[in-house]
Length: 479
Image (cartoon, rainbow, N blue to C red; front, side):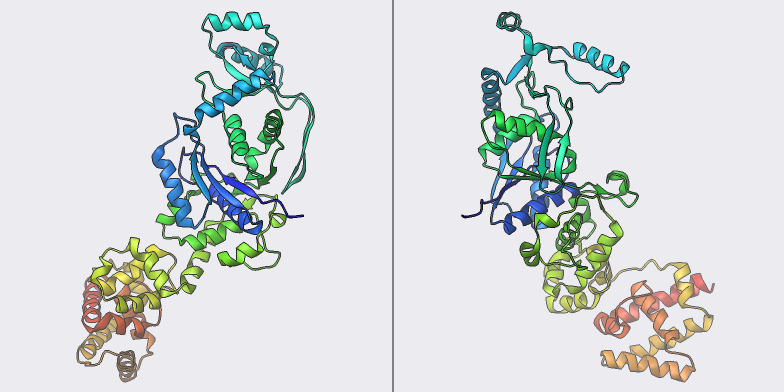
């Protein structure tokens, strides 16, 4: 017998940017689609008209595309399906499975206060469910506004979660919840179930924060005469202090990490590891490998820790292993010059030299800028003192500057030989010249092989930066 195709959906609300938790949900759904030969639907849940923003919907889709998440159907917008949800709500009223609730906000607040005083959780009393047809007609004729509530069975709820196993909610956990508001817009519960039915969703993989909604949704599916999909709830993502990941933890949206120079493949890989493991110690996976290895059985139920430093480490590793062509394409948005006006062959050599040591794309764009533009480094006084321990070192650099100005071939071999010969003549270690020279031409104390840097910078720029640093040292360090 052929296995049932998995139809999954990712359904963000456009009330903010794409949170990394939402991005992880999208990624897990995409990989499960590949694993189980299924389809992924993108649905924008924008029925909260007051908070939803069309521009944010576009931003979410752009973030997904940047991240590399591919969907098969959609995007579908719930705001375009309001009449469908309204029709479905009234169908349940006609079947006696839902009812009009005419209770005012003030009346509900009194019930809530009463429950609070009795140290009980507030549950709607359900008093409108017992109104007679005559009472309902009178209220309707008087123009009284109402919401539509679902008649939630008062029983123990048990369902088998794909990730957590058996989940139990005791009796009295749920009240009769609202399906349609007084302005005829649907609540989340109604719209999500109607859409899952209409779109043929077979498996719902979402965050742990939705787990308490699942009994409500299962009952709604059954009220519509449909078999519920299988549910799986992903673990929470916490920060390093084991608190809910939020703005106070730093960047939390995909867009923020993109703008901080993180590669999409690095963020994708890292998010996969937040709640899933391959069963061994591997941390780096290509998407093709994940398509084959990812499975629902290896998704964890315990909270995942989002460690920005770990992501930064992984991003640096990715920068070091991607092709130079990929690095050039990725760094383009961060460059302060027009790449079309640059010798691309030369630029690729510069990128190849530095990408193995850059932390992110911003860092990479910064370290390659002095090769293309003539920049004025902001040398740090304390760093300069570390590489220039004696006044004599400045004089040594001046001699090196004079020697370099006379070299005709500025090859790697020539600039290295000249420096080492000078160090020997001066009776000092080569490092006495190497460390100040590196700082002079990059304003950094570490980097790729120095003589490769000098060669690629070329004679004119090397002499310019070296002269600037000598001037800075005489004015600021040994003034």
